[in-house]
Image (tube, rainbow over all chains, first blue to last red; front, side, top):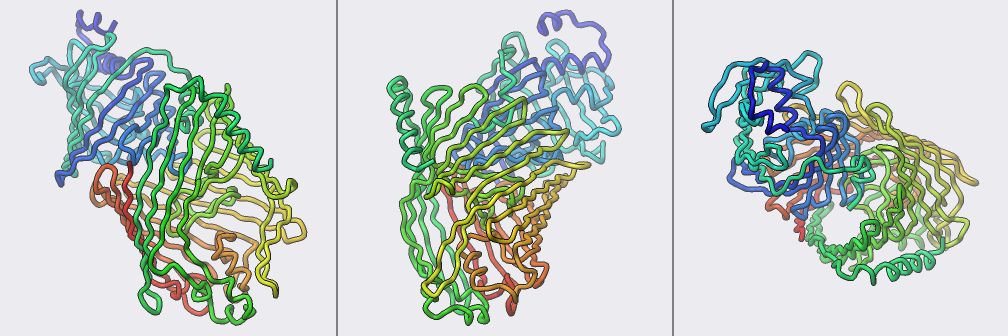
Length: 243
Length: 392
């Protein structure tokens, strides 16, 4: 359906564009397996793999590490668009509720934070959208959209600038700006190897560059399924502990 | 429930289920952990241990899971420790000479079946039968509602030993759960019954706890240390959430003891993570069973503390921790415990460095400031632990 709409682009407002991008990025349900390669400034490389289930357009997210052995079985449950976070540590069989500020923590020392995984439709609800114009990114015509954080919202970025594919409505680049300084660029996410999976544009590779610590993180998609039936009881503490 | 009955139940279920699922293989994992413990008291001392943890697990069906692990541990170096070297001279003089032998502790090589359990998932139930970790409570260092464990002050996140028990969890809704634990003891009337009801309200996890459990007390007698078991009942509350972005948690329990004084344990903590990833935590712990002055501590109190029966020695203590990640592969932390009454402190700086995806180096230091009869006395020595852990 997204693909059909993409074939008939019309004059769209910034809000409409960002809503369509949100639909692409947050399908009703999804299950994906991802390899996470974090290249540190020192040149060291850390690799993780995880499985991620998402429901209600990213409102509920369960992320479970599958490799390496050191963190295998460790899991994170994010509900209410990341406003409630529980972490499970299999080594001690302990579940702990985390305060929401913990979602600002870096995900395994990478440029991603926990907030980047479970914020649901934050682009729509927590930002004002402005259409800055149209530009090409990697030879693809894109909308250039600026998102400015609404007052009284708890999102960690004061501003985002997105380049959104005019046909597929998937962002090809996102620039994240500092929480307190909307002119200070913190990190850049590039989405590449765009594939159509079950009619939904999907990035096969995402590269996040953090300008603060000069790390580069690659998220390589191993597999993805969309709109599959996922029971609600997967997004519970009980499921966190389940092997 | 007698121990043999529990073992019989595990094998009965395993035998029933295995033939149908022979195509699913048992998977193995674990870690190897060499560790160097070094201490400067009157002279430098050291002990080296090597631990191999071997885990085996198998999903028999989507609703039946088996897990077991065996620990092989060897010790070298100074394996004999005289506990009296850690206690004030005034307390030593109160110990009968014939009882000093009981204050000697020897580390012995061991092969231990640490965990071995079956988990069944019928409907909303989760049933765990066998030797398993039982960890409860929001506190980082102390857990008044956890009657099964005592954490190590300088390494509170280390895994806890398995407990022989039958655990039943009934899950309701998104995050509400009732947990029942039955733990057998030598006498049937000493069986531990533990109940925990947990739910979520707004951004808080709230749990109420009740337990019938034996109270084990070491009493010094002319014939040596005698373990006495009496009945006790516990009611507690555990709350964990946030207020205006600050993590807040509290945990408390009243313990009513047969033929002995009732007491209360209470803990409150705050934590916060700054934008740069730095995390701070502060935790206050109170135990009304314990004296408010270290000069009133008896040999029994010290022995109970050193043997792991008591979680702490004095009534009020405060723990703080600061954690930063100066480099992406390293975590640096500084924790300290402050004894309100003697005003002595224990510092535990630590560094965790990820050498490789499955190889971690950990260094934990120890430095205490107390003098005289203080709990965190310098006689515990300066030193630390250097640990490597390789996961496979």
